Image (cartoon, rainbow, N blue to C red; front, side, top):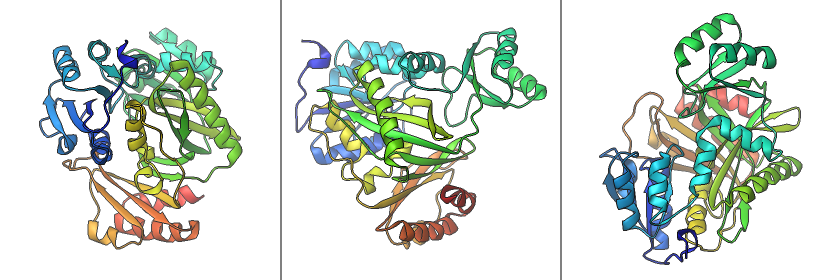
Length: 384
């Protein structure tokens, strides 16, 4: 029997997680009531997920540590997609890993990702591989200005990329990024950014949460508002998701991030894991993305993904606003990740729930006033 088909125990099942950040922490919080126990592998001694399970402190590229983790658990997963392939393969030899390593390989390299989506007939912005300055100039001749130059690997939250609007931008970006494997993507003057989060069980059954509108600041997700797009758009997004999940024989939660332009959806990127834009599901859906991910990888029945009302997620980046003032807003759910504050770091979030969109807007403006910074301005752009 292969590791992928091996039965997983119910209560007392031991789940290994490559990564001990806030996503791992929220998996732990969701799994403890189900009777699961967790072991996290992370290089940080203060990994915030360790509050919900045991910590195996080691580097992600430590193959021996990955094997040790595999020997301690019944099934494994990960909370970020940049797990070294060697570690994933070593773990997969010993215990089941969900999502499997083929999904990791597809998401770790932007060129591989775009080629895969294109081969499946899933629309993406125009793109070109860039291995030299000559490649870059030829790619710009093809795609034109503006365009976005990105590293093929390891970029996230706006890191490892630069917008090229003219020759001066090109020179600065080339000096900064040359030496890495690169991809040039056409700039998309999108009307909105959105994401679809879905879950697929081992038996192929799938469920999806509502398509969610997202607002970013400096490349980092700041606000997420689910349930505001029409059924036709959601259906088209779900079809793309289904095609990809079936191709990968996927198990667990998968996220597709889209640009919406002229009524069309273009996939910006995929994430084979639970996702920041789905944090609202903890407090605003019947079954959260975290619980359903665990249900999927342990062969439990999937939970209902319906919204329980109107929800809006605020991401706390770099600092936490005044907790007591924020929690005075009706319908507010507070999440502190237990991480030290520093610029650009995700250290918490809050989800605001309401019975109606009008009530949600009123509470959101009040919360934005408490949070300060860019939130009042970004909130106005969300409702625009």
